Image (tube, rainbow, N blue to C red):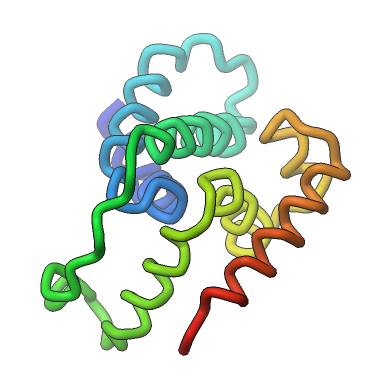
Length: 149
């Protein structure tokens, strides 16, 4: 179990952090609780990644709905990056994402970061493909309107 968790931490952290923002750690913890509790129900080991992604997205949306976002403290981001990063850009992107609904953040992560097809995202989110298309369009438009590079 330890090896499984260590292997999944980077991916789950990225998904949860992008959707739940400041509540990403809570979402990640809830994701691993659900994964470890239900791992025996996974019938096909090859489906592990998709199964974990579904749980992570669900928990991240749930965590993001849990309350208002706290403002991002740029000083808290300094020194956390392993590679050179423009902190102002990170803060701008994070602030822009914070202005979007959790469902919009989720669809942006699934389509634009994970590269899932509309059909795959629809199955994962449990919504029709047309809903994915409209959410994605609205999410991209909202992000673009709010983005001030």
